[in-house]
Length: 394
Image (cartoon, rainbow, N blue to C red; front, side, top):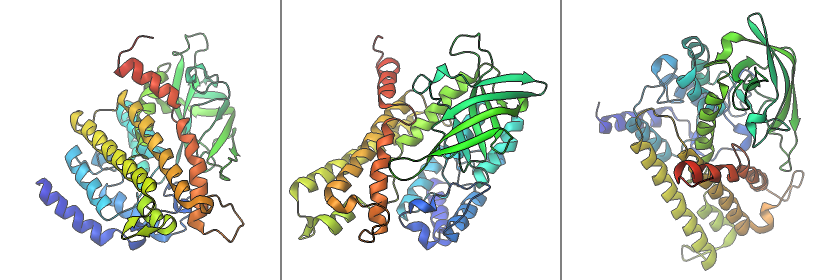
């Protein structure tokens, strides 16, 4: 099928199958993460997920046998463009499709792929990440959570922190130390386990934003099957590094104007004043234009990177560039929103004087501050770019 024919087919399918409410800005409480405990405030969110999953469009470039559509990169770009054209919300988001799924496609066994990937594609399992520890954040390889062999299992003891979404998660992908005598970056194993396993305790961490997207997770003699070790025992750092590249590319995607929220132009119209069809404040108008130009440049850079890469090739060190610039763009976007909205962007819960979108902006602004830390700090990304992209000496 030609790309033009594929575009027409996709356009027709989307017009018929994308519900009206899925073409609007997505409220924070309609996050389409799926999972065994999913609660759908908007029934059309579940309908949209099911329709997209049935077509393979939740993970369009994955093989059909694992729930994808088997699209090539050109077809995937057409699909993405058509989704943007109708302002469609993502049907499914989360670490399953952006992190552990791609890592399993690259490093998982056939049995692991068959067990986990179709469920990820259908939104049946919510995944969380067990990486950081209280004494092993940016120096991740210093992790101390232990895993000791016991027959066909490993017995895991330790603690993880900043385990995003762990309070809702069904499964965790986790880094554990299986050989405490090995050098720091060796003796680490990448393993998967169900969060309902006895010995797993999750405690949400309340943030300044008023939400608790992060948690601390404790393991007390947690039993995990050896069949869930990804790649090789003691070689988990290899998988961990690749997954971080997938994560950073995903986080970077919040830049480039990909958010399904009110545009800066719409906010300017509502809060900053418009005269003769233009934003009245010249400085603000220039700042928004500059931001939009940077968004477009970032989009084109990411598109070029995809086009220049081999089909299906995993992201490399350039993912650090996407993560750094994308998160800076997202933070700048919220600063512009505050500049426009003034005190209307500083509301809090329980105050009827503020509309719900205004309260969401306050929390979004506070949440954006974490962009410089999650997925590896901005300083870590700059170090990676200096060494692996620019080739600068240590």
